[in-house]
Amino acid sequence: MQQADKHTGQIQAIWVAIVILALIRLVSIGLYPLMETTEARYGEMGRLMLTSNDWITPWIDYGEPFWGKPPASVWATSTGLSLFGINEFGARFPHWLFGIITAAGTWYLARRRGAEVATMATAILGSSMLFLVASGAVMTDMLMTVGITMTMAGFWLAMEQAGNRPGGSIMLFVGLAIGLLAKGPVAVVLCGLPLGLWTLWNGKLVLVWQRIPWMRGLLFTLLLSAPWYWLAEQRTPGFLEYFLVGEHWKRFTVSGWSGDLYGNAHDFPRGSIWLFALAAFLPWTFLIPAAIYRGRKKDQTQALPDDEQDARCWNRFLVLWALSPMMFFTMSGNILITYVLPAAPAVALLAGEAMSRRLSHAQAMKTVLSGVIFSSLVMLSSLIYVVVNAEQLNSTKMLISYYKSQKDTSIPIYLYGNHRQYSANFYLQRPVVYLHSEDEIDRTAAQTPIQLAIQRKQYDRLPAERQASLKVKTEIGDWLLSGVITK
Image (cartoon, rainbow, N blue to C red; front, side, top):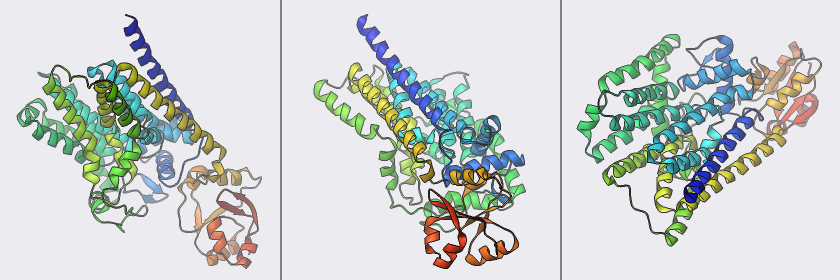
């Protein structure tokens, strides 16, 4: 009895640590500015959607449609802004909530393996560095991870549920629709690849066909997602060609793809996605192998569950799910670390299973609690750093705040250079005008008094005479703001 009470107390301690970490992340999302480029871009798209009341076409700037992604994450951001105001908390809150939903789905899948596995899997997921960052960042990846997690969980539940219990199948096809509306067909590929391989590996083609109503289910998915694709093409012709061919083929097969309308294509060495995965799951990348190695020196590996065949199928399912993003993106150079995120729930489930089998209860609980505490301390340290060094962050919030604090804001602010600053629109809540050359500065100043914001590296390239004419009055981080310029 005392041993059982001790186990219960250890599990409860981990849940307390998980809740504290989630609350730290929640508090943090309103304390630092939207970062360029991704966060500020999607935050501004949410603001434009809210102010324009156009829920079909995401707009990246005034009069410029965004063809790079479907709108589901922008819908969420816009909803958050409508609830909490035009601020960082409103923009990020829906994405924090998506992290909570993903963690809850991971716990739901793991709970049939026991309270210990479910607790460890949830803790490992929630304290992994990439997941922790993404669950409070304005981007598309966390919502797609929700969709993929629902699809994979729905598939497994459908395989377990004999008879006429459609819950798993409904979850599967709703998850696919969420993925299609969050990021597009890549979500279907990242689900189809592991599910197809698992079916063939385990020789369950007939059972998978019998248990899941594929024809009706896929039609249901299309009914949920296809209308937006049709409406988007009608509103802004050319969207489908760019999105399906450019974003879903050339982005991944053409190194340094030059057709990207919204930035520069990345060109990492082939196979870099595996290195990204090692970084994404810190601190567990090193903590779990070390713990298992030490534990196996003391205790022999525990036996598999009684139903060895079911356990083998379950582990294969998790392995394929965990590896699918890395397998798919291995030969792609145009990648980001966030592409690993859909694998996070499966990695956490695998880690929880492995630790439960190979470590004593006390060793496993101690390792997991240590990891969650470590991630909490890293999060707190990072939060303190960004709050203290807000001016140095890659955002124009402090610049715009200073400009708006002046007594006379009737003199407009212009930004110098070719690099668009989405955060400037977000915080100014109106379009920012860019001047691209010295001649444009002269022509604009000849018509109306202006204030000019220019980054330090661009200012240093200007001739000394031009620098003197700008009459810089303040420096905020990387930005210099001129006094009133007239000609």
